[in-house]
Length: 156
Image (cartoon, rainbow, N blue to C red):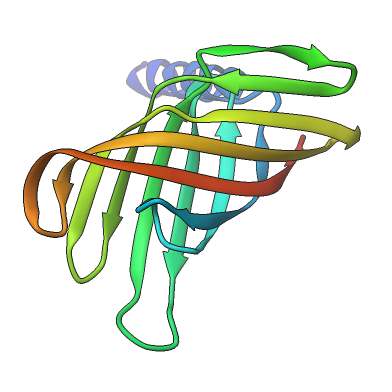
């Protein structure tokens, strides 16, 4: 009897987990631009699962000289809409964390434009004013910056 109950619970759990990811997801790349003290030039893996609100960016920067660094971005597209024709916009709160020789972290507000020239391909560009609370020099409030990037995602 316990085996049957366990099996039923397992099947229900798997069905529920499948439903959580049954909607569109995206994966692509983002290329960071070093603007006004933002994150360093880097390539980020960008992905989104609609049942999980944040758009996630995971990146690594390996310079020719100096040490490597890693970055994590979590952005929630709170407002989305159509700007003109095939160009859309998004804006919302986000977080960033960069780890390398030092650690920096803070809040950001990505404002982006995206287009779907050939669905399921999305092209985008975004600028994110940022305020850090942990800077390479230690706790520093506010540590202002501007992060920027462009890239692509494939939706499936």
